[in-house]
Image 1 (cartoon, helix red, strand yellow):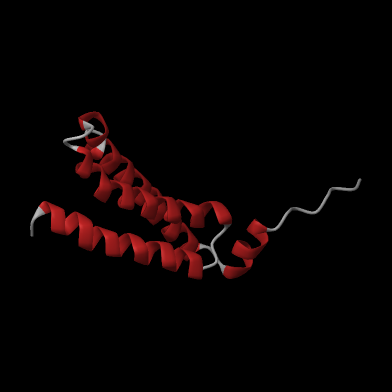
Image 2 (tube, one colour):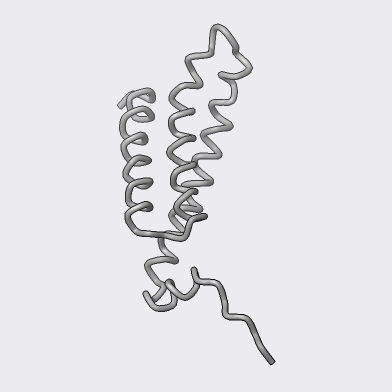
Length: 103
């Protein structure tokens, strides 16, 4: 499969699925927004090579953005694994503000 097709189609579809499932899983705001940021970085990744003639410096950010996508993908996957291993009661109380200590 050519590089362009794999990056634009397969990775794009996977990024959309990750963002949708993160939103549906009702993760805490920070973790769900990381999945949205991953989708945004994939969209930028598809657009960056189009600048190779008009602005090669911007197009040169393509591999840097790829590393960011990889790193953020690992972070999102680790957060998903941690969410799967967290009991439901603990997950709901972890997102709530702690009660004030009145002593």
